[in-house]
Image (cartoon, one colour):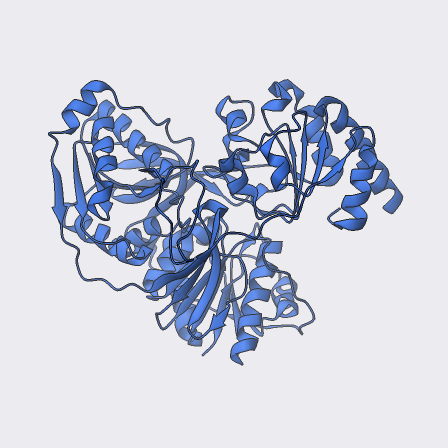
Length: 325
Length: 244
Protein backbone atom coordinates (compact mmCIF):
# COMPACT_ATOMS: atom_id res chain seq x y z
CA UNK A 1 0.00 0.00 0.00
CA UNK A 2 1.23 3.49 -0.85
CA UNK A 3 0.07 6.82 -2.20
CA UNK A 4 1.39 8.26 -5.46
CA UNK A 5 1.03 11.91 -6.42
CA UNK A 6 1.83 13.59 -9.72
CA UNK A 7 3.74 16.78 -8.90
CA UNK A 8 3.03 18.93 -11.94
CA UNK A 9 5.41 21.68 -12.99
CA UNK A 10 5.09 24.57 -15.39
CA UNK A 11 8.35 25.43 -17.14
CA UNK A 12 10.36 23.77 -14.42
CA UNK A 13 8.58 25.36 -11.46
CA UNK A 14 6.04 23.80 -9.16
CA UNK A 15 2.80 25.65 -8.66
CA UNK A 16 0.68 26.16 -5.59
CA UNK A 17 -1.73 23.52 -6.91
CA UNK A 18 1.20 21.07 -6.94
CA UNK A 19 1.92 21.70 -3.27
CA UNK A 20 -1.79 21.32 -2.52
CA UNK A 21 -1.89 17.96 -4.31
CA UNK A 22 1.24 16.72 -2.51
CA UNK A 23 -0.14 17.89 0.86
CA UNK A 24 -3.45 16.16 0.09
CA UNK A 25 -1.76 12.91 -0.94
CA UNK A 26 0.52 12.98 2.11
CA UNK A 27 -2.46 13.41 4.41
CA UNK A 28 -4.20 10.38 2.86
CA UNK A 29 -0.93 8.44 3.28
CA UNK A 30 -0.74 9.51 6.92
CA UNK A 31 -4.30 8.33 7.54
CA UNK A 32 -3.50 5.01 5.84
CA UNK A 33 -0.27 4.70 7.77
CA UNK A 34 1.81 4.51 4.63
CA UNK A 35 4.14 6.71 2.60
CA UNK A 36 3.65 9.23 -0.17
CA UNK A 37 5.74 9.21 -3.37
CA UNK A 38 5.72 12.12 -5.80
CA UNK A 39 6.45 11.80 -9.53
CA UNK A 40 8.15 14.75 -11.24
CA UNK A 41 8.36 14.80 -15.03
CA UNK A 42 10.71 17.30 -16.67
CA UNK A 43 13.53 19.61 -15.70
CA UNK A 44 12.97 20.75 -12.12
CA UNK A 45 15.88 21.70 -9.86
CA UNK A 46 17.14 19.08 -7.37
CA UNK A 47 16.46 21.57 -4.60
CA UNK A 48 12.81 21.91 -5.57
CA UNK A 49 12.39 18.16 -5.96
CA UNK A 50 13.85 17.47 -2.51
CA UNK A 51 11.68 20.31 -1.26
CA UNK A 52 8.51 18.31 -1.99
CA UNK A 53 9.35 16.59 1.29
CA UNK A 54 8.28 19.74 3.04
CA UNK A 55 4.72 19.03 1.88
CA UNK A 56 4.86 15.41 2.98
CA UNK A 57 6.39 13.38 0.12
CA UNK A 58 9.01 10.95 1.40
CA UNK A 59 10.25 9.91 -2.03
CA UNK A 60 10.40 11.63 -5.40
CA UNK A 61 10.62 9.69 -8.66
CA UNK A 62 12.27 12.02 -11.12
CA UNK A 63 11.71 11.46 -14.84
CA UNK A 64 13.86 13.44 -17.27
CA UNK A 65 13.28 13.14 -20.99
CA UNK A 66 13.88 15.92 -23.49
CA UNK A 67 10.83 14.87 -25.46
CA UNK A 68 8.56 15.48 -22.49
CA UNK A 69 8.51 19.24 -22.68
CA UNK A 70 4.94 19.34 -23.89
CA UNK A 71 1.84 17.66 -22.60
CA UNK A 72 1.69 14.25 -24.27
CA UNK A 73 -1.05 12.66 -22.20
CA UNK A 74 -0.47 9.13 -23.47
CA UNK A 75 3.21 9.17 -22.51
CA UNK A 76 2.58 10.85 -19.15
CA UNK A 77 0.03 8.11 -18.50
CA UNK A 78 2.58 5.46 -19.38
CA UNK A 79 5.12 6.95 -16.95
CA UNK A 80 2.65 7.43 -14.11
CA UNK A 81 1.21 3.95 -14.66
CA UNK A 82 4.69 2.42 -14.41
CA UNK A 83 5.47 4.54 -11.35
CA UNK A 84 2.23 3.43 -9.68
CA UNK A 85 3.16 -0.20 -10.31
CA UNK A 86 6.74 0.23 -9.12
CA UNK A 87 5.70 1.63 -5.73
CA UNK A 88 2.59 -0.56 -5.43
CA UNK A 89 0.32 2.48 -5.33
CA UNK A 90 -3.15 1.90 -3.98
CA UNK A 91 -4.08 5.59 -4.18
CA UNK A 92 -3.14 8.13 -6.85
CA UNK A 93 -3.59 11.89 -6.52
CA UNK A 94 -3.39 14.40 -9.36
CA UNK A 95 -4.31 18.10 -9.67
CA UNK A 96 -7.57 18.88 -11.49
CA UNK A 97 -5.79 21.33 -13.81
CA UNK A 98 -5.78 21.21 -17.61
CA UNK A 99 -2.79 18.90 -17.39
CA UNK A 100 -4.54 16.75 -14.82
CA UNK A 101 -7.72 16.65 -16.91
CA UNK A 102 -5.71 15.33 -19.85
CA UNK A 103 -3.90 12.64 -17.87
CA UNK A 104 -6.23 11.47 -15.09
CA UNK A 105 -8.90 9.71 -17.21
CA UNK A 106 -6.27 7.83 -19.24
CA UNK A 107 -4.42 6.79 -16.12
CA UNK A 108 -7.70 5.73 -14.54
CA UNK A 109 -8.29 3.28 -17.40
CA UNK A 110 -4.68 2.09 -17.40
CA UNK A 111 -4.77 1.29 -13.68
CA UNK A 112 -8.44 0.36 -13.76
CA UNK A 113 -8.79 2.80 -10.91
CA UNK A 114 -12.05 4.59 -10.18
CA UNK A 115 -11.50 8.34 -10.51
CA UNK A 116 -13.16 11.16 -8.64
CA UNK A 117 -12.37 14.30 -10.59
CA UNK A 118 -12.79 17.71 -9.05
CA UNK A 119 -12.60 16.57 -5.42
CA UNK A 120 -12.97 19.47 -2.99
CA UNK A 121 -11.90 17.90 0.32
CA UNK A 122 -10.16 14.93 1.90
CA UNK A 123 -11.99 11.60 1.65
CA UNK A 124 -14.91 11.51 4.07
CA UNK A 125 -14.23 7.80 4.53
CA UNK A 126 -11.29 5.57 3.62
CA UNK A 127 -13.37 2.40 3.55
CA UNK A 128 -15.47 2.55 1.50
CA UNK A 129 -13.29 5.20 -0.11
CA UNK A 130 -15.59 8.20 -0.42
CA UNK A 131 -14.75 11.64 -1.75
CA UNK A 132 -16.89 14.74 -2.04
CA UNK A 133 -17.04 16.75 -5.24
CA UNK A 134 -19.23 19.37 -6.82
CA UNK A 135 -21.86 18.41 -9.35
CA UNK A 136 -24.28 20.29 -11.57
CA UNK A 137 -21.49 22.82 -12.10
CA UNK A 138 -21.40 23.88 -8.47
CA UNK A 139 -25.16 23.81 -7.86
CA UNK A 140 -24.83 20.59 -5.87
CA UNK A 141 -22.40 18.40 -3.97
CA UNK A 142 -22.09 14.66 -4.26
CA UNK A 143 -20.25 11.92 -2.40
CA UNK A 144 -18.59 9.46 -4.75
CA UNK A 145 -17.57 5.97 -3.64
CA UNK A 146 -14.73 4.25 -5.48
CA UNK A 147 -15.04 0.47 -5.55
CA UNK A 148 -11.94 -0.50 -7.58
CA UNK A 149 -8.77 -1.74 -5.91
CA UNK A 150 -6.80 1.39 -6.83
CA UNK A 151 -8.38 4.75 -6.05
CA UNK A 152 -7.71 7.97 -7.93
CA UNK A 153 -8.53 11.53 -6.91
CA UNK A 154 -8.11 14.68 -9.01
CA UNK A 155 -8.18 17.55 -6.53
CA UNK A 156 -9.57 20.98 -7.46
CA UNK A 157 -6.95 23.77 -7.14
CA UNK A 158 -7.39 26.10 -4.16
CA UNK A 159 -9.62 23.67 -2.29
CA UNK A 160 -7.07 22.03 0.02
CA UNK A 161 -4.60 23.83 2.24
CA UNK A 162 -0.88 23.44 1.83
CA UNK A 163 0.77 21.58 4.73
CA UNK A 164 4.41 22.19 5.46
CA UNK A 165 6.96 20.96 7.95
CA UNK A 166 8.27 17.71 6.44
CA UNK A 167 11.93 16.85 5.89
CA UNK A 168 13.63 16.65 2.49
CA UNK A 169 12.42 13.87 0.21
CA UNK A 170 14.75 11.24 -1.27
CA UNK A 171 15.04 11.82 -5.01
CA UNK A 172 15.41 8.78 -7.26
CA UNK A 173 15.84 8.75 -11.02
CA UNK A 174 13.01 6.89 -12.70
CA UNK A 175 13.35 6.12 -16.38
CA UNK A 176 10.75 3.85 -17.91
CA UNK A 177 11.43 3.00 -21.57
CA UNK A 178 9.09 4.98 -23.80
CA UNK A 179 9.05 3.78 -27.43
CA UNK A 180 9.17 6.65 -29.95
CA UNK A 181 5.85 5.48 -31.38
CA UNK A 182 4.07 6.63 -28.24
CA UNK A 183 4.72 10.26 -29.07
CA UNK A 184 1.72 11.10 -31.20
CA UNK A 185 0.95 14.74 -30.50
CA UNK A 186 3.16 17.36 -32.14
CA UNK A 187 3.34 20.73 -30.42
CA UNK A 188 3.42 23.52 -33.00
CA UNK A 189 3.05 26.63 -30.89
CA UNK A 190 2.53 27.60 -27.26
CA UNK A 191 0.65 30.84 -26.65
CA UNK A 192 1.35 31.88 -23.10
CA UNK A 193 -1.06 34.07 -21.21
CA UNK A 194 1.87 36.29 -20.38
CA UNK A 195 2.47 37.84 -17.01
CA UNK A 196 -1.06 37.30 -15.85
CA UNK A 197 -2.34 35.10 -13.08
CA UNK A 198 -4.11 31.95 -14.30
CA UNK A 199 -7.79 32.27 -13.53
CA UNK A 200 -8.28 28.66 -12.50
CA UNK A 201 -5.64 28.91 -9.81
CA UNK A 202 -6.07 32.53 -8.72
CA UNK A 203 -6.76 33.24 -5.05
CA UNK A 204 -8.27 36.61 -5.87
CA UNK A 205 -10.47 37.31 -8.88
CA UNK A 206 -11.96 40.57 -10.16
CA UNK A 207 -14.81 39.95 -12.56
CA UNK A 208 -17.02 42.30 -14.51
CA UNK A 209 -20.13 42.10 -16.65
CA UNK A 210 -22.45 44.04 -18.89
CA UNK A 211 -22.70 46.81 -16.32
CA UNK A 212 -19.34 48.04 -17.59
CA UNK A 213 -21.15 49.19 -20.76
CA UNK A 214 -18.28 48.46 -23.15
CA UNK A 215 -14.83 46.89 -23.50
CA UNK A 216 -13.20 50.32 -23.44
CA UNK A 217 -14.13 50.64 -19.74
CA UNK A 218 -12.12 47.62 -18.59
CA UNK A 219 -9.13 49.72 -17.62
CA UNK A 220 -10.39 50.25 -14.08
CA UNK A 221 -11.13 46.52 -13.72
CA UNK A 222 -7.56 45.72 -14.71
CA UNK A 223 -6.26 48.40 -12.34
CA UNK A 224 -8.21 46.88 -9.47
CA UNK A 225 -6.94 43.41 -10.36
CA UNK A 226 -3.40 44.70 -10.54
CA UNK A 227 -3.67 46.52 -7.21
CA UNK A 228 -4.93 43.33 -5.55
CA UNK A 229 -2.71 40.91 -7.45
CA UNK A 230 -5.87 39.27 -8.79
CA UNK A 231 -6.84 37.55 -12.03
CA UNK A 232 -9.56 39.06 -14.22
CA UNK A 233 -12.74 37.27 -15.25
CA UNK A 234 -16.03 38.13 -16.91
CA UNK A 235 -19.64 37.05 -17.34
CA UNK A 236 -20.99 35.09 -20.32
CA UNK A 237 -22.69 37.97 -22.19
CA UNK A 238 -19.45 39.93 -22.10
CA UNK A 239 -17.47 37.01 -23.57
CA UNK A 240 -20.22 36.34 -26.14
CA UNK A 241 -20.17 39.96 -27.30
CA UNK A 242 -16.41 39.74 -27.72
CA UNK A 243 -15.66 42.39 -25.08
CA UNK A 244 -13.40 39.92 -23.30
CA UNK A 245 -11.75 36.65 -24.36
CA UNK A 246 -13.70 33.41 -23.83
CA UNK A 247 -11.09 32.02 -21.46
CA UNK A 248 -12.14 34.67 -18.92
CA UNK A 249 -15.77 33.55 -18.88
CA UNK A 250 -16.73 32.06 -15.54
CA UNK A 251 -20.05 30.32 -15.05
CA UNK A 252 -21.80 27.07 -15.77
CA UNK A 253 -20.64 26.89 -19.38
CA UNK A 254 -17.36 28.67 -18.70
CA UNK A 255 -14.79 28.06 -16.03
CA UNK A 256 -15.74 27.03 -12.52
CA UNK A 257 -13.57 28.73 -9.95
CA UNK A 258 -13.23 28.77 -6.18
CA UNK A 259 -10.95 31.68 -5.22
CA UNK A 260 -10.63 33.13 -1.73
CA UNK A 261 -12.13 36.38 -2.97
CA UNK A 262 -14.43 36.99 -5.94
CA UNK A 263 -15.37 40.58 -6.73
CA UNK A 264 -18.26 40.85 -9.20
CA UNK A 265 -18.76 44.25 -10.80
CA UNK A 266 -21.80 44.97 -12.93
CA UNK A 267 -22.85 41.31 -13.02
CA UNK A 268 -26.49 40.64 -12.13
CA UNK A 269 -25.87 37.07 -10.97
CA UNK A 270 -27.83 34.74 -13.23
CA UNK A 271 -28.06 31.18 -11.89
CA UNK A 272 -25.57 29.96 -14.51
CA UNK A 273 -23.02 32.54 -13.40
CA UNK A 274 -23.51 31.75 -9.71
CA UNK A 275 -22.92 28.07 -10.44
CA UNK A 276 -19.43 28.85 -11.64
CA UNK A 277 -18.40 30.94 -8.64
CA UNK A 278 -20.46 29.55 -5.76
CA UNK A 279 -17.47 27.93 -4.09
CA UNK A 280 -15.61 31.23 -3.77
CA UNK A 281 -14.85 31.74 -0.10
CA UNK A 282 -15.81 35.44 -0.04
CA UNK A 283 -17.97 37.16 -2.65
CA UNK A 284 -18.21 40.95 -3.08
CA UNK A 285 -20.90 42.34 -5.37
CA UNK A 286 -20.88 45.87 -6.76
CA UNK A 287 -24.00 46.67 -8.74
CA UNK A 288 -26.15 49.74 -9.40
CA UNK A 289 -29.32 47.62 -9.20
CA UNK A 290 -30.15 46.84 -5.59
CA UNK A 291 -32.44 44.02 -6.77
CA UNK A 292 -29.61 42.19 -8.56
CA UNK A 293 -29.91 38.50 -7.55
CA UNK A 294 -26.15 38.35 -6.97
CA UNK A 295 -26.54 40.20 -3.64
CA UNK A 296 -28.29 37.10 -2.26
CA UNK A 297 -25.14 35.07 -2.88
CA UNK A 298 -22.73 37.75 -1.69
CA UNK A 299 -20.91 38.32 1.59
CA UNK A 300 -20.36 42.03 1.03
CA UNK A 301 -22.26 44.32 -1.29
CA UNK A 302 -22.19 47.88 -2.53
CA UNK A 303 -25.17 49.32 -4.37
CA UNK A 304 -23.60 51.97 -6.52
CA UNK A 305 -22.21 53.06 -9.83
CA UNK A 306 -19.16 51.00 -10.77
CA UNK A 307 -17.65 54.00 -12.53
CA UNK A 308 -17.42 55.84 -9.22
CA UNK A 309 -17.00 52.89 -6.81
CA UNK A 310 -14.24 50.99 -8.61
CA UNK A 311 -11.71 53.88 -8.87
CA UNK A 312 -12.25 54.56 -5.14
CA UNK A 313 -11.72 50.88 -4.45
CA UNK A 314 -8.45 50.91 -6.41
CA UNK A 315 -7.21 53.83 -4.31
CA UNK A 316 -8.28 52.19 -1.04
CA UNK A 317 -6.54 48.92 -1.98
CA UNK A 318 -3.36 50.77 -2.95
CA UNK A 319 -3.43 52.60 0.38
CA UNK A 320 -3.81 49.32 2.27
CA UNK A 321 -0.96 47.71 0.32
CA UNK A 322 1.24 50.76 0.90
CA UNK A 323 0.56 50.64 4.64
CA UNK A 324 1.57 46.98 4.82
CA UNK A 325 4.65 47.03 2.66
CA UNK B 1 -14.24 11.54 -42.93
CA UNK B 2 -16.26 9.63 -40.34
CA UNK B 3 -17.13 11.54 -37.18
CA UNK B 4 -18.57 10.11 -34.01
CA UNK B 5 -19.97 12.74 -31.65
CA UNK B 6 -20.92 11.59 -28.17
CA UNK B 7 -23.77 13.49 -26.61
CA UNK B 8 -24.98 13.54 -23.06
CA UNK B 9 -28.43 14.50 -21.78
CA UNK B 10 -28.22 17.08 -18.99
CA UNK B 11 -30.47 19.51 -17.09
CA UNK B 12 -30.81 22.90 -18.80
CA UNK B 13 -28.32 25.48 -17.52
CA UNK B 14 -31.12 27.56 -15.94
CA UNK B 15 -32.30 24.62 -13.80
CA UNK B 16 -32.60 25.21 -10.09
CA UNK B 17 -31.22 21.94 -8.79
CA UNK B 18 -33.14 20.01 -6.11
CA UNK B 19 -32.45 16.51 -4.80
CA UNK B 20 -34.95 13.83 -3.81
CA UNK B 21 -33.97 12.57 -0.33
CA UNK B 22 -30.36 13.37 -1.21
CA UNK B 23 -30.39 10.28 -3.44
CA UNK B 24 -30.40 11.96 -6.82
CA UNK B 25 -31.74 14.80 -8.92
CA UNK B 26 -35.41 15.61 -8.45
CA UNK B 27 -36.49 15.62 -12.11
CA UNK B 28 -39.75 17.51 -11.50
CA UNK B 29 -39.92 20.45 -13.87
CA UNK B 30 -36.39 19.89 -15.17
CA UNK B 31 -35.87 20.30 -18.89
CA UNK B 32 -33.09 18.22 -20.38
CA UNK B 33 -30.84 19.49 -23.14
CA UNK B 34 -27.87 18.26 -25.16
CA UNK B 35 -24.80 19.00 -23.03
CA UNK B 36 -23.69 22.45 -24.34
CA UNK B 37 -20.07 21.39 -24.95
CA UNK B 38 -21.23 18.31 -26.85
CA UNK B 39 -23.29 20.59 -29.05
CA UNK B 40 -20.16 22.64 -29.79
CA UNK B 41 -18.42 19.41 -30.83
CA UNK B 42 -21.38 18.40 -32.99
CA UNK B 43 -21.49 21.73 -34.80
CA UNK B 44 -17.77 21.64 -35.58
CA UNK B 45 -18.07 18.09 -36.94
CA UNK B 46 -20.93 19.25 -39.19
CA UNK B 47 -18.96 22.28 -40.41
CA UNK B 48 -16.01 20.09 -41.40
CA UNK B 49 -18.29 17.52 -43.01
CA UNK B 50 -20.06 20.19 -45.03
CA UNK B 51 -16.73 21.53 -46.27
CA UNK B 52 -14.89 18.27 -46.89
CA UNK B 53 -17.51 15.53 -47.03
CA UNK B 54 -18.12 12.62 -44.70
CA UNK B 55 -20.64 11.46 -42.14
CA UNK B 56 -21.50 12.50 -38.62
CA UNK B 57 -22.93 9.89 -36.25
CA UNK B 58 -24.19 10.89 -32.82
CA UNK B 59 -23.98 8.44 -29.95
CA UNK B 60 -25.76 8.55 -26.63
CA UNK B 61 -25.48 6.14 -23.72
CA UNK B 62 -28.71 6.28 -21.78
CA UNK B 63 -32.41 5.56 -21.66
CA UNK B 64 -35.13 6.32 -24.22
CA UNK B 65 -35.88 9.57 -22.39
CA UNK B 66 -33.03 11.21 -24.29
CA UNK B 67 -34.48 10.47 -27.73
CA UNK B 68 -35.96 13.97 -28.22
CA UNK B 69 -32.46 15.37 -27.79
CA UNK B 70 -30.96 12.71 -30.08
CA UNK B 71 -33.55 13.76 -32.68
CA UNK B 72 -32.52 17.36 -32.11
CA UNK B 73 -28.91 16.42 -32.93
CA UNK B 74 -30.20 14.80 -36.14
CA UNK B 75 -32.22 17.96 -36.87
CA UNK B 76 -29.09 20.08 -36.44
CA UNK B 77 -27.53 17.94 -39.15
CA UNK B 78 -26.11 14.63 -37.92
CA UNK B 79 -26.64 11.78 -40.41
CA UNK B 80 -27.55 8.99 -38.02
CA UNK B 81 -27.64 8.13 -34.35
CA UNK B 82 -26.90 5.25 -32.03
CA UNK B 83 -28.31 4.92 -28.54
CA UNK B 84 -26.78 2.41 -26.14
CA UNK B 85 -29.72 1.35 -24.05
CA UNK B 86 -28.21 1.45 -20.55
CA UNK B 87 -28.07 3.70 -17.51
CA UNK B 88 -24.87 5.78 -17.82
CA UNK B 89 -23.79 4.78 -14.32
CA UNK B 90 -20.22 6.03 -14.37
CA UNK B 91 -17.71 7.51 -16.78
CA UNK B 92 -15.78 4.26 -17.15
CA UNK B 93 -18.90 2.31 -18.07
CA UNK B 94 -19.90 4.97 -20.62
CA UNK B 95 -16.39 5.11 -22.11
CA UNK B 96 -16.37 1.29 -22.50
CA UNK B 97 -19.65 1.45 -24.45
CA UNK B 98 -18.39 4.21 -26.74
CA UNK B 99 -15.00 2.56 -27.30
CA UNK B 100 -16.70 -0.72 -28.19
CA UNK B 101 -18.89 0.91 -30.84
CA UNK B 102 -15.98 3.00 -32.13
CA UNK B 103 -13.81 -0.10 -32.52
CA UNK B 104 -16.54 -1.91 -34.45
CA UNK B 105 -17.45 0.98 -36.75
CA UNK B 106 -14.06 2.66 -37.19
CA UNK B 107 -14.31 6.46 -36.97
CA UNK B 108 -11.66 9.00 -37.96
CA UNK B 109 -12.56 11.50 -35.27
CA UNK B 110 -14.36 10.95 -31.97
CA UNK B 111 -15.61 14.09 -30.26
CA UNK B 112 -17.11 14.79 -26.85
CA UNK B 113 -17.70 17.97 -24.88
CA UNK B 114 -14.92 19.02 -22.52
CA UNK B 115 -17.15 17.91 -19.63
CA UNK B 116 -20.82 17.30 -18.98
CA UNK B 117 -22.50 20.02 -16.96
CA UNK B 118 -24.11 17.50 -14.59
CA UNK B 119 -21.15 15.54 -13.17
CA UNK B 120 -18.36 17.80 -14.46
CA UNK B 121 -15.96 14.89 -14.53
CA UNK B 122 -14.12 15.59 -17.80
CA UNK B 123 -13.33 11.87 -17.92
CA UNK B 124 -15.03 10.16 -20.85
CA UNK B 125 -12.89 11.50 -23.74
CA UNK B 126 -9.56 10.50 -22.18
CA UNK B 127 -10.96 7.12 -21.17
CA UNK B 128 -12.15 6.34 -24.71
CA UNK B 129 -8.71 7.26 -26.05
CA UNK B 130 -6.91 5.05 -23.56
CA UNK B 131 -9.28 2.14 -24.24
CA UNK B 132 -8.56 2.52 -27.98
CA UNK B 133 -4.89 3.41 -27.61
CA UNK B 134 -5.21 6.60 -29.65
CA UNK B 135 -4.37 10.21 -28.76
CA UNK B 136 -6.79 12.53 -27.03
CA UNK B 137 -6.67 16.31 -27.20
CA UNK B 138 -8.68 17.59 -24.29
CA UNK B 139 -10.31 21.00 -23.89
CA UNK B 140 -9.80 21.89 -27.56
CA UNK B 141 -10.82 25.38 -28.66
CA UNK B 142 -10.12 24.88 -32.39
CA UNK B 143 -10.21 21.93 -34.75
CA UNK B 144 -9.20 21.81 -38.41
CA UNK B 145 -8.53 18.74 -40.51
CA UNK B 146 -6.47 18.49 -43.68
CA UNK B 147 -6.11 15.04 -45.19
CA UNK B 148 -5.10 12.60 -42.48
CA UNK B 149 -3.83 15.23 -40.08
CA UNK B 150 -5.70 17.47 -37.68
CA UNK B 151 -4.55 20.73 -36.14
CA UNK B 152 -6.10 21.67 -32.84
CA UNK B 153 -5.72 24.42 -30.30
CA UNK B 154 -6.14 23.36 -26.70
CA UNK B 155 -6.14 24.97 -23.30
CA UNK B 156 -3.10 24.18 -21.22
CA UNK B 157 -2.09 25.51 -17.83
CA UNK B 158 -0.66 28.93 -18.50
CA UNK B 159 -2.08 29.46 -21.97
CA UNK B 160 -2.99 27.68 -25.16
CA UNK B 161 -1.13 25.28 -27.38
CA UNK B 162 -1.50 24.47 -31.06
CA UNK B 163 -0.90 20.79 -31.74
CA UNK B 164 -1.16 18.44 -34.67
CA UNK B 165 -2.14 14.82 -34.55
CA UNK B 166 -2.78 12.06 -37.07
CA UNK B 167 -6.21 10.48 -37.47
CA UNK B 168 -7.85 8.71 -35.69
CA UNK B 169 -8.01 10.62 -32.44
CA UNK B 170 -10.37 11.77 -29.69
CA UNK B 171 -10.92 15.41 -28.75
CA UNK B 172 -13.07 17.13 -26.16
CA UNK B 173 -14.60 20.43 -27.24
CA UNK B 174 -14.32 23.70 -25.38
CA UNK B 175 -16.04 26.97 -26.19
CA UNK B 176 -14.56 28.64 -29.23
CA UNK B 177 -14.51 25.51 -31.41
CA UNK B 178 -17.84 26.46 -33.01
CA UNK B 179 -21.05 28.38 -32.47
CA UNK B 180 -23.97 25.99 -31.91
CA UNK B 181 -26.79 26.14 -34.44
CA UNK B 182 -30.53 26.20 -34.09
CA UNK B 183 -32.17 23.45 -36.16
CA UNK B 184 -34.26 24.73 -39.07
CA UNK B 185 -37.65 23.40 -40.14
CA UNK B 186 -36.21 21.25 -42.91
CA UNK B 187 -33.76 19.74 -40.45
CA UNK B 188 -36.53 18.96 -37.98
CA UNK B 189 -38.62 17.27 -40.70
CA UNK B 190 -35.77 15.14 -42.06
CA UNK B 191 -34.62 14.20 -38.54
CA UNK B 192 -37.76 12.11 -38.09
CA UNK B 193 -36.72 9.68 -40.79
CA UNK B 194 -33.00 9.53 -40.09
CA UNK B 195 -31.80 6.21 -38.62
CA UNK B 196 -31.65 5.93 -34.82
CA UNK B 197 -30.26 2.56 -33.92
CA UNK B 198 -30.76 1.23 -30.39
CA UNK B 199 -28.13 -1.26 -29.21
CA UNK B 200 -27.68 -3.15 -25.97
CA UNK B 201 -24.62 -2.42 -23.81
CA UNK B 202 -21.51 -4.56 -23.61
CA UNK B 203 -20.48 -5.86 -20.21
CA UNK B 204 -18.39 -3.28 -18.33
CA UNK B 205 -17.72 -2.57 -14.69
CA UNK B 206 -18.77 0.49 -12.78
CA UNK B 207 -15.93 1.55 -10.55
CA UNK B 208 -17.42 4.67 -9.02
CA UNK B 209 -20.89 5.51 -7.69
CA UNK B 210 -22.44 8.75 -6.51
CA UNK B 211 -24.11 7.69 -3.29
CA UNK B 212 -25.39 10.92 -1.78
CA UNK B 213 -26.18 14.46 -2.88
CA UNK B 214 -26.78 17.72 -1.13
CA UNK B 215 -27.07 21.39 -1.88
CA UNK B 216 -24.15 23.68 -1.03
CA UNK B 217 -24.55 25.44 2.33
CA UNK B 218 -26.60 28.65 2.14
CA UNK B 219 -24.81 31.99 2.38
CA UNK B 220 -25.13 34.30 5.38
CA UNK B 221 -26.92 37.60 4.75
CA UNK B 222 -24.91 40.03 2.64
CA UNK B 223 -23.29 42.91 4.54
CA UNK B 224 -24.07 46.16 2.72
CA UNK B 225 -21.55 48.98 2.50
CA UNK B 226 -22.32 52.55 1.48
CA UNK B 227 -20.97 53.61 -1.94
CA UNK B 228 -19.67 56.72 -0.19
CA UNK B 229 -17.47 54.68 2.11
CA UNK B 230 -15.65 52.27 -0.18
CA UNK B 231 -12.58 52.08 2.06
CA UNK B 232 -14.76 50.30 4.65
CA UNK B 233 -15.02 47.39 2.22
CA UNK B 234 -11.24 47.17 2.00
CA UNK B 235 -11.03 47.24 5.81
CA UNK B 236 -13.57 44.41 6.11
CA UNK B 237 -11.83 42.31 3.48
CA UNK B 238 -8.54 42.83 5.26
CA UNK B 239 -9.54 42.61 8.93
CA UNK B 240 -12.75 40.57 9.01
CA UNK B 241 -12.68 38.25 6.00
CA UNK B 242 -8.86 38.25 5.95
CA UNK B 243 -8.69 37.61 2.22
CA UNK B 244 -6.52 40.57 1.20
